[in-house]
Length: 256
Image (tube, rainbow, N blue to C red; front, side, top):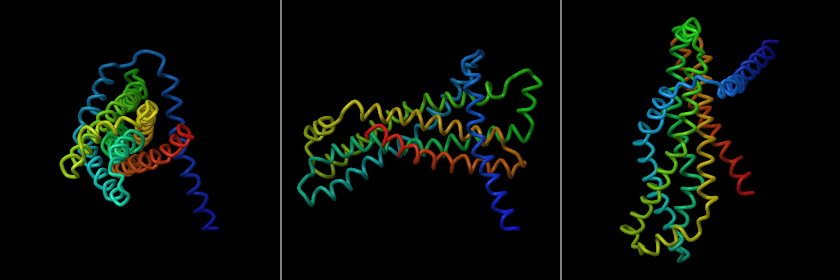
C-alpha cells in the first residue's frame, strides 16, 4: 500500500506541475489582446533579457564557432575536404547551435531570474497585494516577461550566429591557413533563407518556453525560501529539457 501511495503521490505532483504551464498560458492569451499592456515594463524586461545577456551569449557563440572550425578541420583533413569547414560552421550555427546554445544560456540566466523574482513576490505576498490595488498580476508581471523573452531571443540568436561564424573565420584563416575569400564564399554558397528563418523561428519558440516555464514556476511557488530555490531550479532544468525536445520536434517538422 505504501508503494502504491508513493506512486499515486508522484503522479499527482507530476500532473499538477504539468498543468501549471497550460493554465498560465491560457491566462496570458486571454489577457494579451486587451489593454493596458504596460509598455515601460516590457521595455525594461527587454533590456534585462537582451542587453544584459549579451556578454554570456556572445562569449559562448564565438568559442563555439572557433571549436567547431577546429573539430571540422580535424575531420575533413583526413579526406582533403578542408574547404567544407566554412559550410559546416555556417549551417551549424544558423540551424542548430545558435538557437539551442543561446536558449540554454538565456534559460540559465533569465529563466532563473524570472522564477526567483516571481517566487519571492509570491511567498512575500506581493502578488496578492497587487490584487488589492486592482492590478492583474498576470498582466503586470507575467506578460511583459514573456513578450520580452520572445522578442529578444531572435535578436540574440542573430548576433550569436554572426559572432560564431566570425569566430570560425578567424580560426580557419589565421590558424588553419584557409583562404579568406574562399572561406567567405563557401560560407554563403550552400546557405538558403530557410536556414536563417528556421533558427529565428526556433529562437522565438524557445523564448516563449523560457518565459512560460520560469514565470509559471515562480508565479505558483509556495513553501517559503526553500520553495523559491526549488522553483528556480525547476525553471532552469525544465526550460533546458523542453528546449532540447522542442528543437528536435521543430527540426523534424521544418526539414522533413
